[in-house]
Length: 401
Image (cartoon, rainbow, N blue to C red; front, side, top):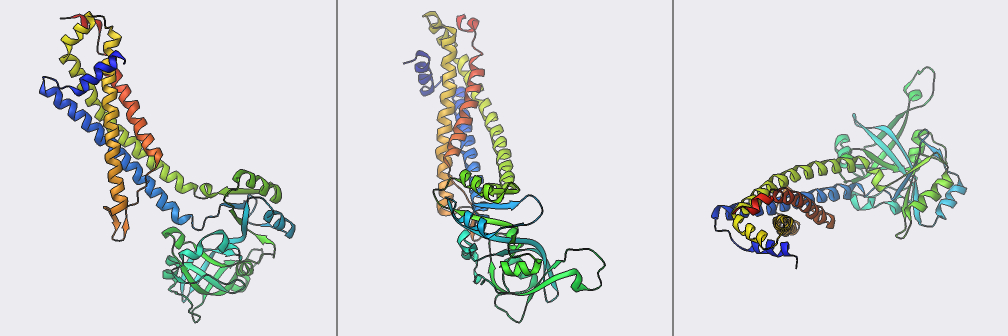
């Protein structure tokens, strides 16, 4: 066994004759344990929050979405339609028409987006699973499905055929306008379902058949704003994207689920990084206690160090004793902190100890990478702190009697 490591282990297990040094060592280890546990709990909390946030938005997010980077719409002919279906890895796709509109009912107005979808949309997303009231719309009918927020704003519920929802959009064109009919396109619709995903989406989309959207926007039969794809389980995403672009042309951009939620990812990652840095700073402060504890131990073992030096140990060997001691303290403390953090997170996941609302527990998620991040952070900081403390040992110190 390595001589320095052997002595370091003995020093870790043994108590000093000075109670103050024992107390400082205990405080240092407790600080590391609490710091590691806190960092792991916070990272697990943010991981849970991230999964919770993306869980609902991903319900209506396709695996891939194709849009044009020139204008708002593009055309899809029958030949392209068949070629897309023949791509290996594409399970199905849906044609989409999406545009900003004004929805009105009984004098209540609400700006929203119409999302005209075809009969394949149910096969692309799990929209049916988030409709607590009513049902999904039928194609080739003036039916719509709205979010909770839009339903409240317009005061409409489901299947009330005496209460229509008017969708309006400005007409494109030039020249003088002499009447409202020349300025605005309108269609009258009936709400048949209410979806509930999250606050933002509940306030944004009004789902309608693609024919209703086409009528409202005066689109041609083969004119759409996007295509949404569902891939097979074993699909190679990059290969599928390449094949889609080769069929639709260079003016098409394709986004995957991560890119569709790019803003959410950036926000969550920024917050996660900020909290990580704050708790890393707490760990750095806690590791000052490790430095102090090792220096106090060096002074306490001064006579023993002189003996070791006299029987052949080098200054480097003696420095390594306290370097290993500091590293062992941080690794042991970090491991105990991870165990405590894991227990706390598991208790929250199992028993809902902390609630956001009376019915919604704070989400947590246990990811392997968080164990790695905490141990790596603790280890690096512990090595630096131990190196600083061990460097205080000089030849003059160990030679003195």
